[in-house]
Amino acid sequence: MSHSTLAPVFTGLRLGLHALLIGLTGFAVARAFLVSSPVAIWTLIAGIAFVAVYLTGAWVARRNGETRIPQRGSAVAWVAALTLLWAVLTWLSPEGAYLVFPLFFLYLHLLPGAGGVVAIVIATGFAICALGLHLGFNVGGVIGPLVGAGVALLIGLAYRALTREAEERERLLAELIRTRRQLAETEREQGALAERARLAREIHDTVAQGLSSIQMLLRAAERDLPESAAGHVRLARETAADSLAETRQIIRQLTPGPLEDGLAPALRRLGLEQARRTSIPVDVTAGDLDLPMGTQTALLRIAQGALSNAVRHAHASRVAIDLSATEESVTLTVRDDGRGFDLDTAVADSHEADSFGLQAMRERVDQLDGALEVASAPGRGTTVRARLPRPAATGAQS
Image (tube, rainbow, N blue to C red):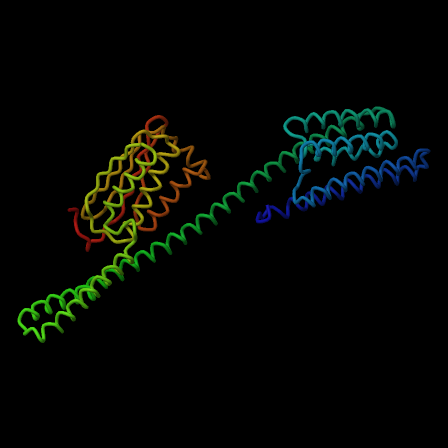
């Protein structure tokens, strides 16, 4: 919980527990000497042993970077040793019974399930009996330990609630950091792809077109010139042809690999590759669209994510991918006949791998001012529909 804002609270509680336990032990020992108890020396020995065992266990936990004994068996042995020494100290000095209060917190913290509550009940009964044998049974000697046990239970429950809240906040913080990194990486990727596509278009529309025109003009001139001059023109034409081939190679390298020939072919290849790997039929219906590279990249990534979820989590036997467009928007729909899921549960458990994938799709769509719709129910399959705005400058569906 190094990043938790509640870490100082937990540190303060632990330090307070240490101080309370050591202080009460010192009080019990000092009281034995003040009243000249015949067992004062034995009380001192029991008190020193109790504090030594406690500090040893706390040091081991601290050294391992944990707030508890590393292994359950060691934790139980440590608590049992402390309880035995406390019982001896209480038997020797009635003031030792006060140590049951900090022991309550150790029981709740270290003993799993109902074990902590059972230990508190037994320790409370022993403290009441010890005080009664030392000082005589009275209402105060009974109510005091009972009230202490009740307060300890309430504080212990509050501590557990704080611990769960801190763990949840840590998980959310880690997920937020992971999402921010993913979004930054996506933005860099989309920016690089868009810039490469822009350069490819510029080179195609300027250099490649110019070289193609030069080649055609030289071919025409070669036919009208005498042979002595035609050789030089032929050499110039061949040089222009080689330069045009190299330019087109550069354009192909600048164009993103999966989207080299457009989004629709990329979706078809995606469906064929998935069907070949998993033997799950993937039906792809997509027309050729003129879309910005950022939109094509986002839709391809969404299709990859939805298809991966359908295969890995939904256990679908068939998947359909549909790409359609209007003048205002383009829509990608991925349907599967898998087991589906409960949308409310998925939102509550958004740290799960498939739900986090849906969240990543939603964030990718939001970046382009689009909308993502997810329709699913247990046993009824899942439909993921991403709708992105289509710039007016792009062409219509062919």
